[in-house]
Amino acid sequence: MKVLKWIGIGFAALVALVLVCSIFVGNDSSSGSASAPAAPAKTYGIGDTLNDGKVALIVTNIETKGSVGDEYSNTAASEGAVYVAVQYKYKNVSGSAIGMFEKPKISLYDPSGTAYEEDINATTSYSSQVGIDEKIISDLNPGITVKSCTVFEVSKELFNQTGWRLILVSDDVSFTINLK
Image (cartoon, rainbow, N blue to C red):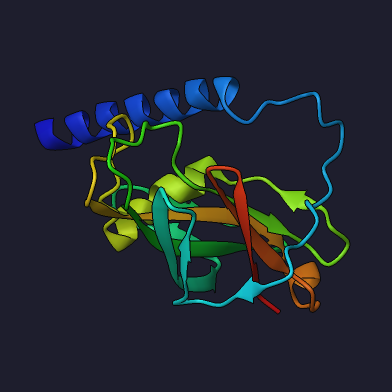
């Protein structure tokens, strides 16, 4: 029973840390628009290496799920919704440590260009399900590869449409992966 208590405390601390970080990162109110950035000329696919000179990133799997998690942390999608779970790994290919606020950012865009925000609770649950080894509050030293994931909750009906894409931004370089 003590183990479950510590897992609960750890989970609560992780959620609090992510919420605090989201306040300081990603709240750029100067843009004024939620539409997708202009797509680069080249698009990539699952398994392609995306390299900005600092980080080499590979999207390893994208799946839709009605619920995510394990026996300790399980989250179900809302009525009429589905989770889009993105697994990826990235390696520090630079000569210095990469700070926790410099990790690649992944956004999901629908066919009309509307951006979808990460579901932090579902991402945390999914992380425990698939064995993510990314360190939340640590720098990533040169030559180290970590596995990570991001989960989005979207309308099941809308996700059946074609034109969905992921845009990955790392060190101000963007990469597009067409999903449908």
